[in-house]
Image: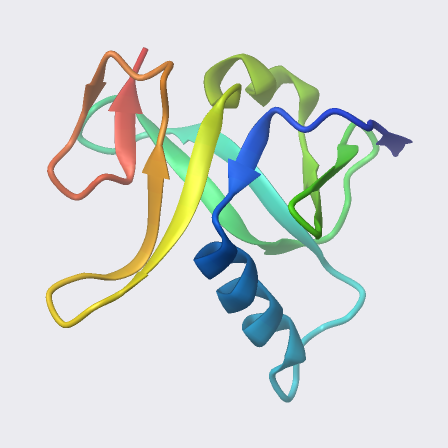
Length: 114
């Protein structure tokens, strides 16, 4: 795994706080890393990956806003400039993605097209 200084994306303070809360939870597997990426699927063609995972051989490690995360370098073109936010309101709760590379997004905000 290679370490890179310049992160392709940004976390809001609310997202950082929620991710740290998840990492402090009882039973959290400390051998995993925060993974961010994309996968085929969803109503708009691509879906976001945001979760904890074991590192793969080709992953790169990034630092952003006080968080370390891993990402397959091939996903960078889809995620460059993206902002990850945590909503904790009555009408919306969960991570949201503001992606300047998306030409179209679905209503739920977890799927996009480029």
